[in-house]
Image 1 (spheres, rainbow, N blue to C red):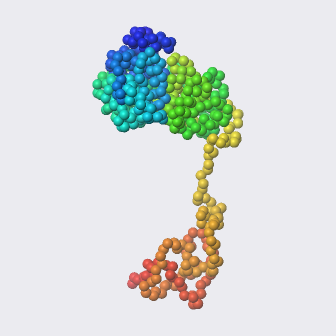
Image 2: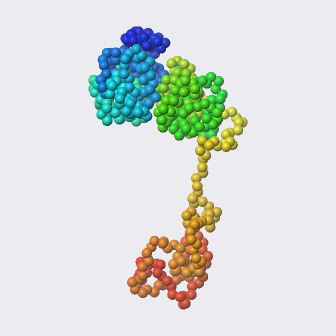
Image 3: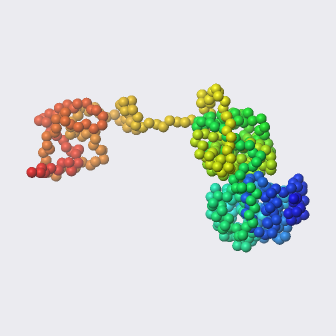
Length: 499
């Protein structure tokens, strides 16, 4: 079947022919006729199968009639990330070159005023991320009552990023009679519940089973120890030994790990870029453009680059960290082997990742073969000096360590820097200076009536608390009366003996 048999307009067919495409993909062949028939569509297909064109091409045909009004877009496309939203806009610019359509990109990280100016002029297609879209609606600069077609793309990624409550709010602002297109690569139970809420008698287009990987991607796993230096050494060996490597995306689970691995690869002479959610939008766009143009053969990224990014020439994908969710593995390795091309996906697995790898193999329904990482007999990287960008592992400080080793050492903030005390005489059993256990904040009170204390016990029977103390000198009770002013009042009360 060719594109001319799908019911697209002549302008759209001319734009498709100019790009060199002649045969639609299975998802395009099945979804485009239903979209043109104004039916709700639930599209399930693995990444890299042409889902974006499956809704862009029929939307261009439907938008040829009508006119946009100020602050009231005609169609709305929701994307989970800024990169995906910008990629969809590129598709509209490519296939809609012969049409005079106003397309607005509403994402975070760019000027709010410029976006508001575009909305004031009126837009036919509004491509947005949920957060920035709600910002415009709450400020009164955007009305969604004129939306005729709603597209929710990468719905499973929306779920992972916590955008489902925002999407529910947005859907309440759109007329109930809208047409909804819902595209996803996986179908967790929560996504299934959402489709029953958002879609009305949809046409289900399922090209492949949920959570399946592309046929042309060769998958391997490499076992390493728990040491981070061995993972980095294994990755560098794999990058150097790969004979057919053109470019590669290296995925990490955390943004901090992306920054550390990026600096480590730079230190060892690799030409590499970084991409994660905490970067400025200009830096993210520049790194992605350089990777697409081939100026940077390596890109260290978080899962922000795992969904929907169309980089056809990616030859390798490395999972430096095994993803915590098995669905993310399908999206990560989907960056290679796109549009029927061959690709390679290698995952570096430590003993802590065995459970996650078992979940991945269960999800995709196949075992991932193991290959050797570091050859035997080679010296480990532990003997090397740690790089400046790699934080050394610090041993925790022992606060209550060996008492014999710490005996006599000044405690922190207690001895040094203070005024030395005057020399003490022989310790007295009841004196103020001789009572080490008396807290300084206790207020002393004089007894209400004179009281004769009982006789003090013998020095050998006096209990000692804490460290060993030197024997005290005997006290001459006849020459000097005892001083009990340091004792609290309740200790000076008389005790009644029971008869």
